[in-house]
Length: 360
Image (tube, rainbow, N blue to C red; front, top):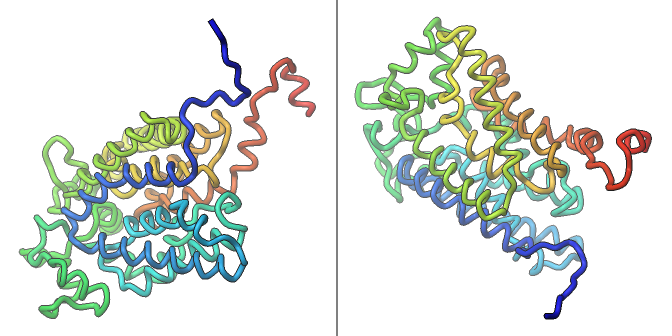
């Protein structure tokens, strides 16, 4: 019998950057489908605008830098960045705001640092923060799910909203947010946060139409289904070893534990673990954003710390900060801490003592 020897690393599954990016995009499809079914065509239109803008902007910058265009564009990193921006922003956001966000993601957060592999921050989250700070009102205009809306925009209405600000029937986004009984519906996170400032307890907020009720009473109408769809895609990525479990596991456990501790202190003021896990972008953040291989921690222990710290900041900012959701801010904060985390969690070199490693 002959034995064949090969040099390390002994990796059975070999994937290039393009394959990894495509697998991540495929895993996002269940969540994107659920998001478009529940909240309308706007997300798919935004995805088209964002992806086309990302490819064009990156192509122009590569041309100016005299870098290979085709090889870089076909690694699908720009496509993934565009999709992450599209699923994070309101589906009726004006098209030019989407383009501005994509420009900051590709030109500033990615290419200024040298392109893929050199960026310090997650490009999609930089885009989100820029848009949120620059256009806070527009970034808060999320439509209610189709089941709660008095008027549900079709494809042409959504297209018209994004490019003109009005549907083909003359409705603007504010009018579409008004449900049948005349009450303006906000997102679940916004509803609870605003209610607390008005003396409405967390428990009382759960009785509002924006929440589903039933077993998952803390899940907002439609939002819980979207979160579970992204969770499904994320678990597929872990199962196929496209990503490791460390960051999403650390983040989700941290969100649950921090939320549970606060909820035990005062259940009428602080949201439950299910509320934080199933609303907003926690599932998207855990599996598709925080796991960015460039801007995240690279050591096994470091990834757990990185994910857990993001989960901690998500709950803290949501509870005590000025923004209902906090994924983008939490990820960017921890992107800045990655060099420190990696430095103190470096694996010990085989054959070297712990004391020797520390002296190094």
